[in-house]
Image (tube, rainbow, N blue to C red; front, side, top):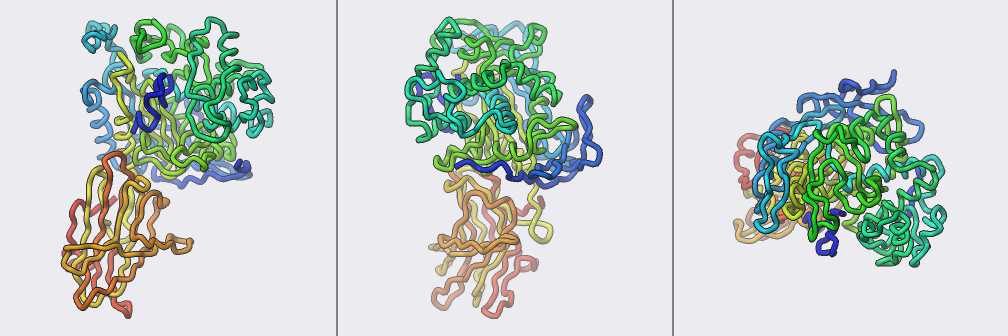
Length: 613
């Protein structure tokens, strides 16, 4: 079952949650405090002579840092401890009805930056229910002695997060020259061309622009041949390349391509090419029976909500099609734990290497973090990875933030800009899929990790911070200053694009009415950028910008200026910071300077607060 749509197409991914580049780009990740490599027991050390900073990909010919993971304090990771504490508290809140039922029976949370895992916490239950009673809409709990608590090492059915592994395996083959990104799928699978699919390319499979509908019930066919026949004969919902539509069929097809060109099963490829080199010892398809006590249970799978009558699914893949394919499928079926996924996250943020192992070149990683879907705004997608999706990435979302979710309640988010990573593994379909709704825990935890990344003031000891609340209006108002001709300050912003904005406004009637004030911003080494609407929204690079604006002339009286930050009720970004506000006369002399205590005391802040991050 894909998370992007229910079987009857009722909800899209967001509703449920709310040209080819050359191989040669560089993934540049700045070092962060406390990122020296100090591996977890069993992790390989960095290569001699290689840096041990906070990760960092590199272009061709440049050696990438190979940071390995170790546990450490938030301070060592360059993170603030209070937001990480709130991350856990907010996640625990979803163990209670939210609003009608718990979002999950339990979860494992892992957050880090650079080579430091600063948070690894288990909450709730891995196995709580024996069955689901549809008549009373209640879960039938196991006796207390048979319930299993969640642990840090609990293994989860990753559901669609499995797609990332299939995508990495495909990019490896592209790197090696055995798979052509722009080739038609029929070059590898001639039978695939049935139903008018002859023009579908490998890139379109990886970016969900093939035209496939979301899914089809392959599991209803009793034989593998019958399942393949359904796929070969499937027609497209839209012409190849003309629209974005997330589909499990893309990654199932890609699995078949990989198995054809390598002669190996996807499970063997996963082990040989990813998990064994990286030391991901609790990641595989079809976990053995001995793992079962350490696996989180999923759903009491019975019609009508499930396509199969299997009872409580525990230790076997939840997805019906993956189950029908023997547990090994390109779209679902991988089981893993949080620490293993953190190794994968660190590998990609390192530019494809971890310890002594390299599974991808930095240029190949760059393809996974580059938007190939510029023709479909809002559906940004690298090769396999989704990009810039606030509906589950929350305030971690940037144009280069990459991740994926899984229907069982799993998610992985990587932010190359801050070198941070977040893993949330929940058993949210336990005891039944209808108990979960949206992606609120993912957003809440991502917001807190984003907040945990400090934003140092541009000057001095504090800067004004807008906060990160949704459905709010915050104002920061300067006193009336006669003779002011120019306004300047430092500005930092990262908001939900278009929906949330910071506006510079002026009033000549004591605050009864306000109008927009156009301004220019410039960041170091760049050309000035005009903002004729007097507003900023979206992504600014998470760096400080210098702002200048002409103070409008309105009669003979002084004009007041203010910042007004507004957010809608859905998602937020990291917020807005303002620092070093000054009002200058025509000769450039300061009439107001917030650095002067007497001037700073005259600022009226509603919803804004001084921040020393």
